[in-house]
Image (cartoon, rainbow, N blue to C red; front, top):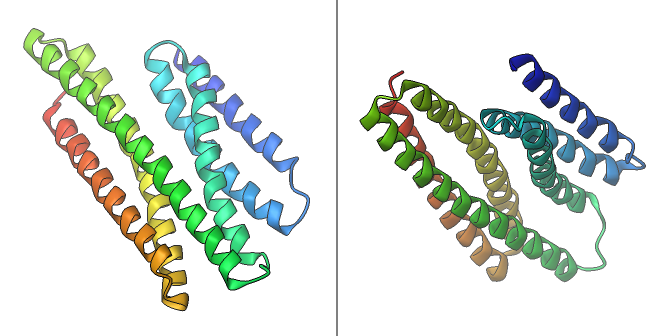
Length: 207
């Protein structure tokens, strides 16, 4: 079963690399692709781990690769736009604001999902602890580790966006973009709170 999980995850990860590399045509596309590759590989690994617990390792890896690729593409898109030439500063700022809003919306959606998953794991752990089900507790521990890795990648994405957009705000003094950065910081704080919940749950599980 373990070997099947490893083969499934490796296969999907390789697929993400092959299909992404085929899309490289120019410098801007290359930048987008590099972001997609990194996200897809990490997503496949995390998704494969979670899917493996339910006997659906390949499907989990495939889904994880897709989600990870979208996150990676967001990073690639942001870097590509910095390279591109805009007709005016206003057009550039509009693109930056749209990017910040997109990343924030995705991060907020992810954080809501993460919170729900943590609540589910907390409930499962309480039941497993009460019944002394160590096998279930080990499964929960593994799920916590997977979510911690996944949430760290999401944090990096938000942190990068805050850094890049703050630089633009410093250059332009844009109040519109500044407010989006503030929203990103708030989302990042909420994500940190959920990461603390994960850490606390993981520390409780001693198996």
